[in-house]
Image (cartoon, rainbow, N blue to C red):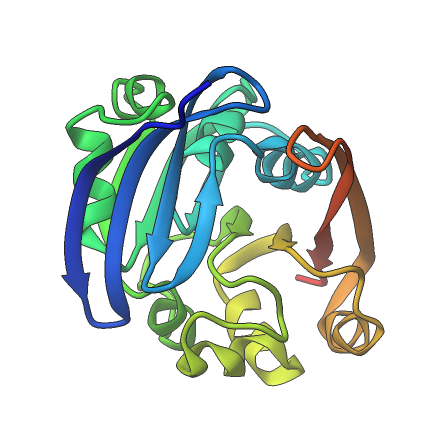
Length: 235
């Protein structure tokens, strides 16, 4: 089978050239969508299990109904759409620093786009998630039931060095101000569970866990793994 690439969009950004492309993947015999930032592969629709589990595991730890959820990092949209499948979710806000990514979904270029943008619960916001977490919560607004984050490769490997301050106890405490009492923070990581990061999580949150999410990798013919960290606000 001949591998064919179609560039759907290319735009310069403050953190590198951003490209969305569609290609045929011989290992599965179907089209997949990929995002590159500079020379780095950010995400692929070939591997979405862990992105969806970020929402599933995060929301499974949340108590109650009428949930308000904040997703940091829109990407291909799989985390956000998985969150919308939870009938308890009343409002879903997705923040992405790159307006181009929001534009892809508003133009319905991606498989998850229609389900995401046609759901009345969804609001897409162009902003810097990390700057928002450093800021004081908006006056008069209650905290989020859950904050789900998938931007960097892992707590140790950030796309932008300015993100690093979120992954220590002080940064996590700043994020915690945006959670409702007993709200949940969940984080996707491409690395195995990190004991040092768990120390930082345990300094701020209760009921912390590092879930290893395994999934079949049709390219290698084996099994790959990501990590989803979950912690509950002490409120």
